[in-house]
Image (cartoon, rainbow, N blue to C red; front, side, top):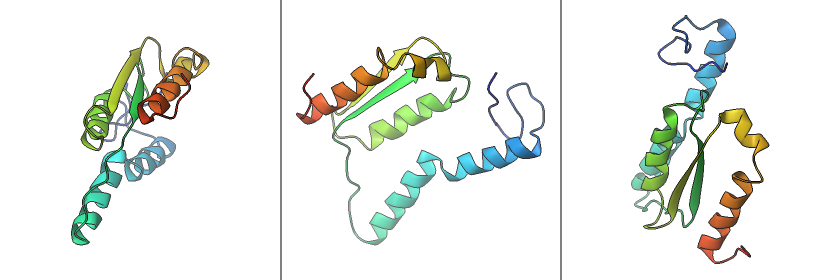
Length: 123
């Protein structure tokens, strides 16, 4: 299964090896929450408001062992930067990789829905 880093241990409670730790460190640097926080701070310094996303459709795999509990954190972040009524979350069965194989029934319709929200979709 996928290895998820939580406080220096994998999902089996074992310490991370060097490769897992390097991946965990990279993922922490690329954290959407961290990026949004930096962006908010910079815009505040410049006296600017945060832009709001006008269309977001999050597809979340219910049995995703890679993203796991971070999916709910992502939902909160995306809701927070979305205009009212612009955010939608779609939970589907399966895991992280199996969702990719189901892109025709999950990912593609979500993309179409996102464009429809903008008024530019043909859906």
